[in-house]
Length: 219
View 1 (cartoon, helix red, strand yellow):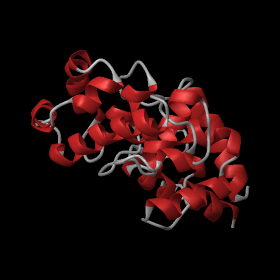
View 2: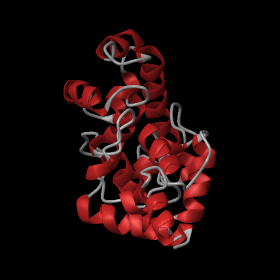
View 3: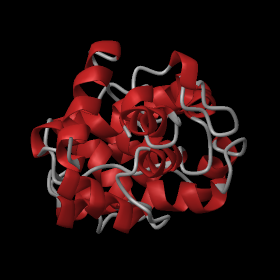
């Protein structure tokens, strides 16, 4: 099968394993997802989900985040990596949303990436999980690893990986595909020791060795 057919098969098989793929970040509205996704950069989702319940209880609205004293917000986020910069980004994003977007999280890629602390990965997650829209594909460390192992890209730069995936994966699958790769990366295709014997993709994954064995038998 060609690369697009293989991508479709990957989507089909992973779809059976992960029937409702979505962000693992806890949130109840688009702005909370924005905050959680900003916090998740170089910090695990597990830790972010420990921090955000108290954070969202303390700052219940976009207005509250916008008005938060910088030192107070930094203290609330002090257990998160790069908390000073993230606190500044969250506060300034809240202010921009109030001043330029009528208090609503924007729903387009160009508007989202204008917000402080928001790049394409964050924007793609917000668009898909908060609004059901797909303008691209979120690329994190798991997506980067699996996209390379599956032979869908040879790049390490997230922007180039995203472009390769968008050319390879059917657009209808973009949003869920990224989330399925993340879930599969955590459960099976782990960084140090991929569990090939447990992987439903082993026979169509160039990194498993199973594909090459099949070619050799045919030869």
